Image (tube, rainbow, N blue to C red):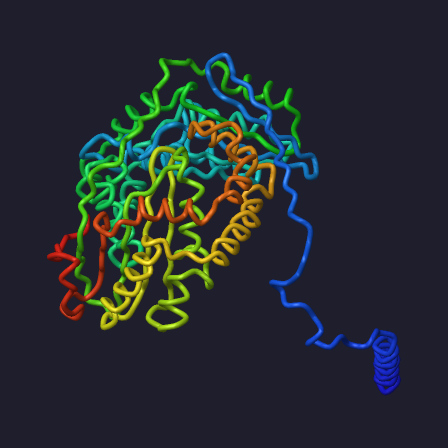
Length: 479
């Protein structure tokens, strides 16, 4: 034992001496005062060349994108179906989500749900399905050796789902519980209700509810699938360790017999006349959720790039942005504050938000309004513009860090009917934005009379709203 301890001690001494000798060889430390500040560093412009996915169309109308990447023996499949929650039958909101969910869990005409799960488990693969307002996405990642079997299973899910009754009952119960619990999440509830207000009268503002779920039966899912799931409504992006010829052959074999129908045109809904004003939702909690915003330009608008920069300066740019800096850093009124800009091809939504204690509700709202009013008046600084443009353009490339992202983004751009050079010219168009463009865009879109302001919290402790907000309207959230 003593011999072992002695050896360990000797090794420690040797390592310690080696470390001292290494340190002695290092150059002397640089004086921190002589180092340039981070924002003064000079480096060459960031170069970004976007690869292009190869595109083709199958005989039955399915659009196929492929981007090869042979670094790893993996293949990613992303299918886009041109339908979403905005196509729910009126009074049966929730059909689109349940249809997508049951396609994964409800078996196929060839396999029971248990058998389908076993096959995917054997491949160490699990498809994910999500539905938003205007499209449904199905994703699957596979090892190269399993590509034939995996795509065959995917095709069965998409073409011949069985919608097993017991799985339907289970899925409906899970969705009902999800809706019941949303009232326990103030921020999620406030965002949903704000969307209902700003999209008032539009399918974008319709959401599943507990009453609407009661009206849905299994037959509604079958009808929805028959109407919207057909080849001319399907786009598939494949990326990874597979050649174009192999991908085309496999997709043709698994999906080629799927019968095409008349093409379903994409539904485009113009912006509605939103219910402007101040709205309350009562919830007896110790903090308020504030969301205030209005319609904004869509991606196809000539104002899109300018508004992207404007939003970054106002609140989505993190710590240096105006709302975050003023509301959180300077005044300490909220632990989270900022803005968001969500743009569809035809229209967008802009909103500022803050989560603050009840007693500071109107102080926080007034501060946000003052920031938006100053921007609306054209008070924008040159250094803000330079910072926002550089940050946006540097961050843009992280939307394309994998072959999967690149193929999906390019396919989605076609679905959104954007110009073929949308991504190629994005950074240059951001760079060309000038102060005059931002001032014009702010004057056009940030007019306070178009604002919808929603406050969720303990109404009795809000205090009195300023007279320029108008008479507050108390609303009840969706059940």
